[in-house]
Amino acid sequence: MVGCETMIRASKRSQGISYAIRDVVLPARELEKKGYEILRLNIGDPNKYDFDTPQHMKDALYEAAQQGYNGYAPSEGYLELREAIVKREKQRNNVDYNADDVCVTTGVTESLQILLEASLDPNDELLIPGPTYPQYQLITRVNEALPISYRCLEDEGWQPDVDQIRRKLSNRTKAIVLINPNNPTGALYSRKIIKEIIDIAGEYNVPLVSDEIYDDLTFSEKQVATASLAKDVPVITFNGFSKVYLVPGWRLGYLMFHHESGELNDVQDAFMRIARSRLCANSVCQRACIAALKGPQDHVLKINNKLKKRRDFAYKRLNEIPGISTAKPEGAFYIFPKIEAMKEKIWNTDKEFVLDLLNEKQVLVVPGSGFCPTYGKNHFRVVILPPMDTLEKAFDKTEVFMKKRLK
Image (cartoon, rainbow, N blue to C red; front, side, top):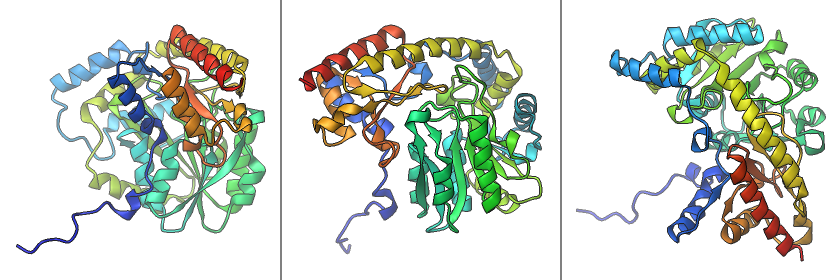
């Protein structure tokens, strides 16, 4: 047997992959092995805290398995589920879709993966908010394209900087991304801002990609769906069940193509071809999500009431801590504080701050630079999902930590 000089090596495209939200879990696990209790404020999973999936959805999941929905589903998703999604969009947003314009996927992440595979060539550009959910940067780069971040304005509640969007458009821009409500900032985009971005997209003949996975999780005003304002500008919308319906582990999302004159036909065809090649999303979970859309929705108000109290507490408490300030989130379940004390040169990076806080006080948050090295740096993301006593304990520990560092 002829010997190999080298074993198989990791691909070049994998070298730059990191995911800040879960990467910080690794040092936390090492502390847990030593017996420390970690206060986890890092991951957007409501079911890790005191939220639970509506009972009628659990029942529907069991019934689907008993009724034999254990084989493959159609690649685009069950027709009954897609029709229920179409009905929701009409009732909630007054937007008309055909069921054939909807594809059910394994979470929104798979929607994003397939869309970018279907639409990006090497050196194309995707205009994304800064800061943003890390997968937009990661998957764009995996496809050898360039994520271009546009600034969101912290002193304006993290609203997108529309003028900068215009300046950063180029002849290589394939789409403008909106995440509304936003992860990691909790920003809820105003109707005016959305309309201005739509107008720019129309002027430059660029489609919009609108991530609306947190659409019903808002505290003061209702979220405005991008497609409801777009008219003749093509919009590709991501949504799913993980957040609003409290089933992140079910991994069920969907994508919707909205275009008046067939502008997205080519990309939609490519998307569906890739979707067929990957078989299908989870069959029994799809059946249960039909029940989710057709069943009672009263859990949403309960979620928002609970989250609003925790948002108010987190906003007040974080702004009381020396060396930290934060804007007030209006949606989702995140808050994105600024480390004002970075000016004191105590830490070189926000990641150093996060690891220092973890090691000394066992409070686990996510470094802001993981959401954008330019517009997220010197910040950190906190989830406001934990019960009030957990948040209070974590913020008290953070305050002691900061006072000690700022002596």
